Structures are given as C-alpha cells and as structure tokens.
Image (cartoon, rainbow, N blue to C red; front, side, top):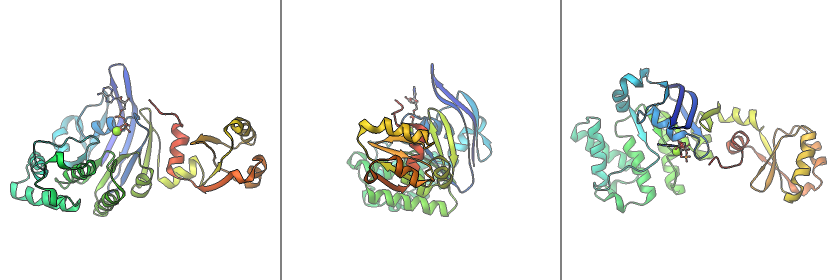
Length: 301
Ligand SMILES: Nc1ncnc2c1ncn2[C@@H]1O[C@H](COP(=O)(O)OP(=O)(O)OP(=O)(O)O)[C@@H](O)[C@H]1O
Ligand SMILES: [Mg+2]
C-alpha cells in the first residue's frame, strides 16, 4: 500500500532522515514509535506528498509519488500532528470545505460530514466555532476530517495526543473498526499502549533511521526478553552493581531511578548478585522497554 525506499531528507546542513526503507502492507496497521525529533513527522510529510524527500522514492498503491502526487493525495486520509483547522469557519464548514478538495458533491459532503462528526461525538458542535472547541475536541475533529474521503489508507500523526482517557478509547475503537473494514493505517505515536494494542507491526525510529521493525511480540522477545527485572537501590551503588551484572553477561539500563535488567534466564544468579532481595521485582516487558533499549535514555534534542 505504501513503499518508501532510501528516503533521505536534509534541511540545509541538517540531516533529518538518513535512508528510510519502509513498507506498509494491505490492511495492516503500522506504528512508527520514536522519540521527539526522530523524524517521524518529516517522514509522514514525504509520504503524504506535503514535502519532497531530498533523495529516495515513494509509491502509494503502486503510484510513484513524483509523478502522481495529486492523485495519491486524493486517496489518502491524513491527520496531521499540528492543528490546521480554519478558525474562521464553523466545525461543519471545515469539513465541507475539506470535502471540496476531493470533489465530493455538496449533498454527499454534508451527509458524510455529519456522519464523521457523529462518529467522534461532535455532531452537537457542528455549528460552533473552532475556537470554542477544547484541544481534545479539535483533535477529534482533525481525525474526523481525515475520514471524509473514505480513504483506504489512513495516516494519523500522533492521533490521541492530548486526549482524555474516554476520548482516547473512543478513537482507538474507531481505528479498530476501520481496521476491521480493511483500512490500512500508518501511525506515528509516542504512546506505547497505542502502538502495542492497535498495531500489527512497529517501526522503531531514532535519529532519522528505522532501527527495528517487527511485531510488538517479536521486538520484545528479541531486544529485552519477556520479563524485566527492576532493581531499586541507592544510586551510589549502581555502577558497582552494573559492573557485577556485566561480568555475568547480564545487560542493564538505568531508567527512571531504577536499574532494568533484560534477558534474565538464571534468576538465582541475579538474586545472588543483588545483595538486597527486597529491591528486586519482576514485571512483563513492554514496547517502552524496547524503546529505551534501542534509543537510549537521553533526550534526542
Ligand atoms: N522545516 C524544517 N527545517 C529545519 N528542520 C526541521 C524542519 N522540519 C523538521 N525539522 C527537524 O527535523 C527533526 C525531526 O523533526 P520531526 O518533526 O520529524 O520529528 P518527530 O519524530 O515527528 O518528533 P515529535 O515526536 O516531537 O513529533 C527535528 O530535529 C526538527 O527540528
Ligand atoms: Mg512528530
């Protein structure tokens, strides 16, 4: 459905994308998980023909973007990260104007607009101004707008950022429903739960590269193991303990005031190495652990 090959992007001397290869298969939901500044939005802007790559090729539904940008744009549903709603128009007018880009006849545009507004529980706001909406309502409206052309491919940049739990679950339900109808989805997100519950595969992106790409289950098994052991000890003793762990070929990372140990196959060995048994606890590994393991703890920028 989407294929990107050798995508590089620079802004002046700043290199933002360093050779991205990515394929999104029919009906699949693919998450792009990565820290602030990793290049997720930049990549999405290339795939949605908003801005061209410096080098590399992109095909959507087999069409080369370089030659068919207009046509591809008409086939995609796009929800940008930044709000670009028109504040001079009402909620309904925003959708109607957007529908015009796709040459949807007026009558049908109105019907579809009301439908997507109902889907995201915004129909009672249809005559309201954009400025009267809360941040979360604007976010829901942006998602609703992305569905107006009934796309087969939906690209949502951080869809649930800033949403309260109810609104977040509402959006997740709708995205699942679209998936069951066969809509392919590409979803850059910071939300680990979103990536692991909605997505078939997850690409971990860091500093303009995709460093890993697989199902959440396989990523967890490969990079950190099914369980994480957490050690909560005085930070003064970390380095000494890390040294001991390393000597016994146990990988660890300092995260959020704790020491995380991965791929522990010999629990007794770990118990012996940690002097205070009460400081040791075990939990299931998540994509967030994979994220830390691959991208490191420090902020990228
Ligand atoms: N027009 C531009 N000119 C110069 N630099 C840019 C431009 N657009 C993006 N960048 C830089 O590219 C890098 C990647 O930005 P991008 O928005 O793609 O990251 P992101 O992964 O989407 O991050 P976030 O999680 O914060 O949304 C950043 O360092 C950003 O400053
Ligand atoms: Mg972004």
